[in-house]
Length: 446
Image 1 (tube, helix red, strand yellow):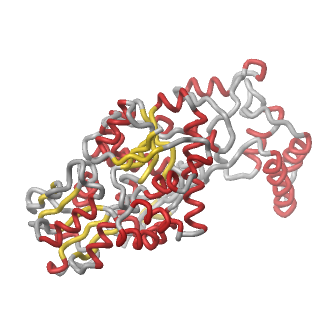
Image 2: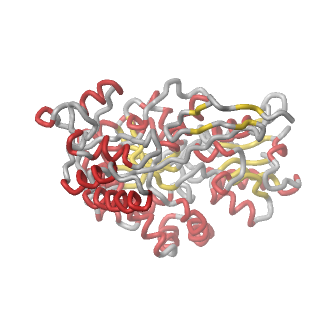
């Protein structure tokens, strides 16, 4: 099997590179060879055409070969957050966070990578045309001989052929150490408009063909990345071991420090929040049209398989989804599903009696897990007839512990509901199911 990366002498896709070189793919019984395919859109086209099996690249760039996310999915994250740096010539006197320094300047950036910078600058209030910002490929950074865009960009910055570049951490480190560049933006660590963090991430992707034909292979690839991340966290010097195999001597000695800085972002999960942010970015820059659901973008089936759960994931329209869930037990073949609940009354017994009581089995009720525990039924009834707060607290404490131990649900997340209003607005009641009661609201006069 072949794994394509668009940058080799870099920290950007290092977990994928290290998974090959440290033997974690082999440990998962996958024979994987590394292949440099630059730029990233060409790597994804190779994935589409079947000449490679995986791409370790920027997540949003999959749209270059798979419009509207048709035909490919993200398996896992190599690291969280958009990972490129804006570096400007040292003699320009740039300061950290000074986005305005790009006005009238020539910025080097690779194809599809440049999209992140363009949108970031727009969100920061820069008009690319009015402010005469030129974003273009770095001279000489194309063709078969280029094994790292960042290093080529750093050399171009030193030679004065560009005023700045938007590229990976290795090129950034080299430019800064040589004294020719200054970091203006590091999005991962908080620079730039807040949405920029979720424009893209370093991910591992595969085709729907591979995932459907061999779900075990996709799951094994995820496990290989997860093991690599854990191994590097345990001993970051392993990065030097990999670097000395693949990188020139100077960069081989730098890579462990770059990976050490990135370890905090080594999390294989791909959250719904990230997918929403990435897809919004893609729509903003015109490479995506539709509202694409999470399950179309992320290989949920493969992520489940990576932890030993074999499942066939189906995406259905909401009304039909609820109908399927509420079929009688004899007709109901759903084994795993996603659903959320909240207590619309703010009272502890509401969800308990509605969802966990055995009398609430479908088709008449909402106990769609077909869960039954006589002690839970007793505690629900006891809570309903008890008024004293201290006694109720004890009852519902035992109830929650019992349900958690039985695990008819596996909790995934609880979101924070944030409501803002002017100080002069009074009497607003915010209910826990997202409704806002304005019946007694009034505005205080200054």
